[in-house]
Length: 199
Image 1 (cartoon, rainbow, N blue to C red):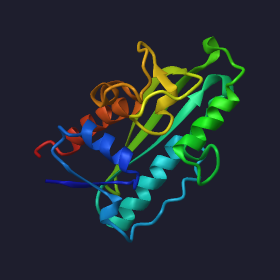
Image 2 (cartoon, rainbow, N blue to C red):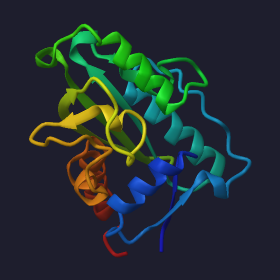
Image 3 (cartoon, one colour):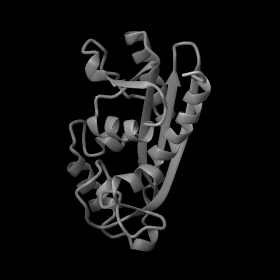
Image 4 (tube, rainbow, N blue to C red):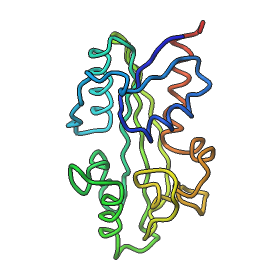
């Protein structure tokens, strides 16, 4: 079975990606299996730039095909912030809770009708020679206080369109069907099935 390294050390992200790609006949290994792999500095100006940089550096470091993604929460009232800075919105060492608190503070005087947002995920596959990119978007709104104990990141604040529960309240099987990451990696599954047609 073909091995593909997931270019992340985030266990929450690894768990979601493995669940979404569970039907693809490849072995997904994370960076914990490669202690010498570099910590890629995500200094790109776009999600695409960060995902490409991570995938390219990890395939060079491991000599194994790599998948990387970068995800951002884009709030329309905030001119698409936090965007590419989503994971470090409240500072370089910010926790999920720190980032959520900052977002809630910035939107405290914004009415619900103007709290539209979208999660956007860019996923990249490369074997060192070829690169394929997939994008997934999920629209919703930001609520004024966290709800739910599941998920991670901004999930307790994000209610996807068509639902009354946050990502942190929805069962994982539903989130992994409708989320931005689910949509991006559903496309990635098609790419991998094309790339490894006989496996």
